[in-house]
Image 1 (tube, rainbow, N blue to C red):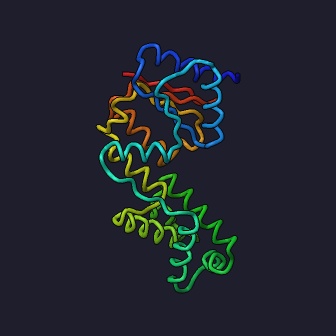
Image 2: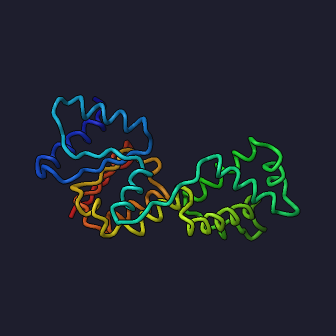
Length: 223
């Protein structure tokens, strides 16, 4: 077993030895990592009760539901792409980037990926307005952010909308208050909106332990 995974398994076993029933939430950025961890845990030959393996979005949904609210519905990729295309069609005097994205499906997909990255990094739209003038995608990013905020009122949004909803409801959410620990395996994707939500978990709620496992980062905070 790889050293990092071994440390995680030992940590889970130690928590369970002290508390037989409180949920242990293990969060990872990809399904591949979650599948690997599930196999390692099951391969020990002994049952470990109440270990929940969750992706970031699943954790956010669980928090919102635990708080008695309905999670925002995240727009599918095709829906987000159509939304950006609609925003571009409403822009007059398009710059070269906007024209390219309007005329090419590949360029539109690349633009959407950039918009998602900016949102997930919690970059405010105004940050793209530099002293020498706005960056090429500043106008569409501002329109994209405003449209998503409008859609949140109708129960829709993107992954960042859902993460922010979970962050607002994390304090006092039963799934967090009852958890023996929240363990994040892998540091990538623990940035921007995801990190903001997890920091809320750590500081605003009664988590037994918050621990990050990665080759570059090993952090633990307990009561």
